[in-house]
Length: 220
Image 1 (cartoon, rainbow, N blue to C red):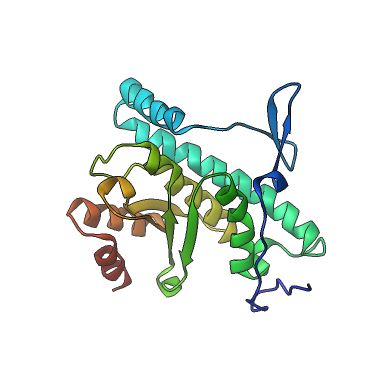
Image 2: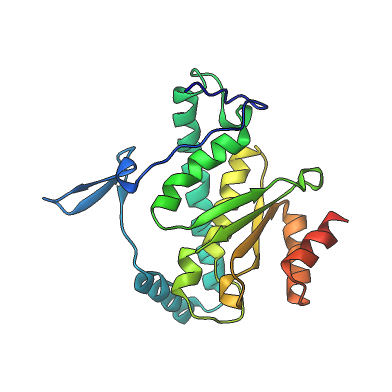
């Protein structure tokens, strides 16, 4: 099947993959490798919960910033590597991801993470004029591992999306979770945009506004 990945190309595409398409296991050394040769690790819900609990015990509220920064570096470097891969496979060695069909690029990037247990996602580009993107995550690995604490916990996801879109948009982006499964919602929602937008979203979130209200306020 031929696919035009340049911006504005066809939109009816979908590929199906399984985890083995993205990871390999060496039974002798008991190591996991990603397709590009990087070493991977499987993280259980207990590990994720313990990581967050341990960080909070050590550094208090600064743990949220630590997880955000970790996610940001992950997303930033992962999208840079992904851009190199896409340039060679689909861009003829010349086109970068921001010159391709954005939906195709982002779905291709996220699908391995879905197969690896990071949840299903949806990206809302309806607020591009306001230089904002909203991402919805179903079955967040972090939120599922944490208790219902009544506040956002997916700081690593927020940082990861900020890093990804900083590369994709070729401009610095910030991220914030405006709705979380750990708050009793059925899914997690994230705002990705300028730091000014993120700061405004954080203010409204602290004031008790829900995700829809925050979207409306920032759109105005």
